[in-house]
Amino acid sequence: MNEITQTQFLGDFSRLRSRVDIQERLKPEFYACEVESIFRRAWLPIASMTDLPNDNYYVVAEVPPLKTSLIVARGDDGKVRALYNVCRHRGARLVKDQSGCRKALTCGFHGWTYATDGRLIGVTDKTQFSDLDPEQLGLVPVHTEVWEDYVFVNFDPKPRGTLPQWLGKFHDQYKGFFSNRQRIASYRIAVESNWNIAINSFSEGYHAAYVHRKTVPDYQGGKQNPQRHRAYLEITEHHGRYSAQANPNRRVTDVEQIAYAHGRPLYPSFPPFSETGLPLPPGVNASRNENWGFDVAEVFPVLIWIIGAHWHANLWFWPICEDKTDVRVEFFAYKAETVGDALAHAYFRTRLREVFREDVGTMEQVTKALKSGAMQNIMLSRQELLLQQHYAVADEMLRSRS
Amino acid sequence: MTTRLLPKQFSALESFVADWALPTEAERLAKLTRTSIVDLKAFYDAMFGRAEEMRSYLSSFRLDAMPDDAKTLFDLLLTFIETAHPIELNWTTTDIDDAFALDRMTIEQFEVVPPS
Image (spheres, each protein chain N blue to C red):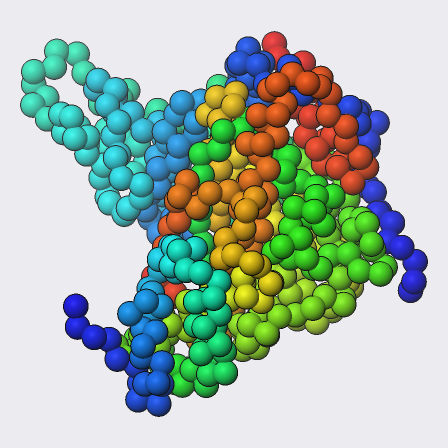
């Protein structure tokens, strides 16, 4: 096959626009609307089941746009609940550490105690309260659903749809993919960037030949695909994904060879799809491209997945205000059993980390340049349809504000 | 601090232990970026020919139960794997110009084998 790769597009693109007014999105008033219409309405992934392996485990999840801290806890009954991290007595922050495993959570202010399902089970010096009903004073819950390895919440008092409806086609297409993994890296950065611009830098591959010329100069592209067109690009009602094609003639460096010789191939090593030896669910490499590199998906509004056969990355973009974003990144890979696996993990995490740092390097420059007001609109190509989709979904939610 | 030793067959590399046998990703990265490309190349060259021998030696141990000298060797080998990129990708410095500043990034460390 000598033909230049053409992207296979799937989905309804009729509502997308190649020109997006970016100036209005940098304003604090616009951001306030985004918080109410998007972040208070959407199903938001906030935690990983990897951190809740058994009953009574909990993690604290910060949700900056809603100025909220949640305790995500697996109760004695095995059920996962997200609860406001606020003691019902006087509003103190109940849990101060990041994670743990305890049967009961006690407030450091006046010693009120809650079960991991949120029930108030202990009030100190109780007789001094004249009208206190512990049954009415459990921790305040948020709508919580578990999907695959992710805990989703919805802050809308009456969510406009279920999580399966929100995920749409994605819901049934990643079965089991995110489990049996090991978290091997986690990075956190407060970036002086608008959150849209931040997440935009990860949902197109047009930049890769330029931004990543030093770290992964030839992992994509090659004779069949000199412009590095996506092999496959699909949008659903709220989300989008694409598959990047590998360059079969990539130069493999010596240490990469050593690192992957006794472990499984991880980024940027992309063996032919038929050799992965895995039954991958239909959402992964959806077009079953033999020359598959990796997938990128945007789970609107805050999460980007980067997905390979034996690994995945979660990239979260939580807005703090209109020009600050809390970027949280995690790399997961198959579980290590041998020294060979540990070497593969070490190579993968550091090679991808440097690529990631290059991407983050663009965010502040772009936000700063746009704030000069030099231009009103940004221009988006067909290879950047996931960005067009991001803004179309955002605008639809902003318009439907009631 | 006591001197950390390597298993006997790797003792020729002991001069690298103090600087390069680092237990965490954050320390390896910090060491990398404060090292000149010339010094990094010297470490790379010393390690390169012996990396497979090291892996083979270490593979007789459980990942989470290595004796001290093997753990030191393991840390040295992991540092080599994690710091090889500037040499192999022909960078002129040990950090990239346009990348996001390292001192603004929080790096969390995880066990090589996750607790079950």
